[in-house]
Image (cartoon, rainbow, N blue to C red; front, side, top):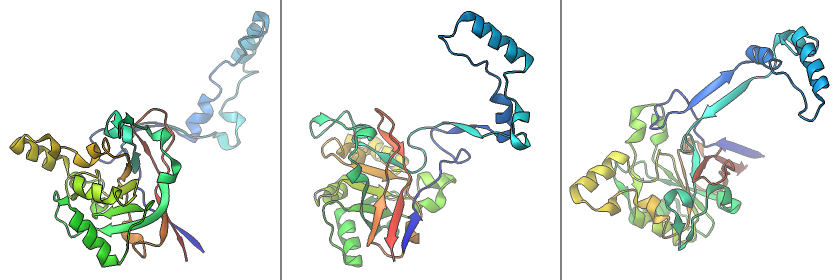
Length: 276
């Protein structure tokens, strides 16, 4: 039997966000009133035909209204205004910089779909304090703990437990982040995709900025993201429910992003697929 476990966070207009989203909603009743408000004709129709239809529209003979539908209701409609980094999403190389490995960086619509589907491996980092950098030794220790050897094409999912804070201010600072050395350690094993259940693959914004102010070392700022300029890869941010998986490997992971042309990220419904 196939089981599918949702590993995604919802896009939520009520949750605190650095770039708030909004949803304009037209409910079924309002939709019934709206559908017939526009006078419809073909641009290539003779002017007399258009005038005749206009008269019929004004008199109600060629108009749809709420009474035209069962129970006086039509279809709902929603318009969303949101950053592509809201909710669970995939960051493509273009998000990290204009080029990757010396070539123009791929936008999210150009990502190979094979990068978004593969064997999932959960690495538990819940013991690491918030704002601390995850190191190669942390990666190796987590792999040793579950007795797993990474192979090319695996998709590593970093579990920090930060998803339990979603919708609260703590969500933006109570998590460790993947360091550049740890990310390189993973990609050198043939991985193309890495995910995390936090708002960012890197350490919290405040921690990185404070380090930069103290050292004036630009390498402290978003090192995992910016490493994507040296090594082409993609990552998934804002995963959830990794603790719902019955085992840390032995499942397929899928995170196909919405196909939005020429952008650096897009929303995705990330899931684990298990065969019992």
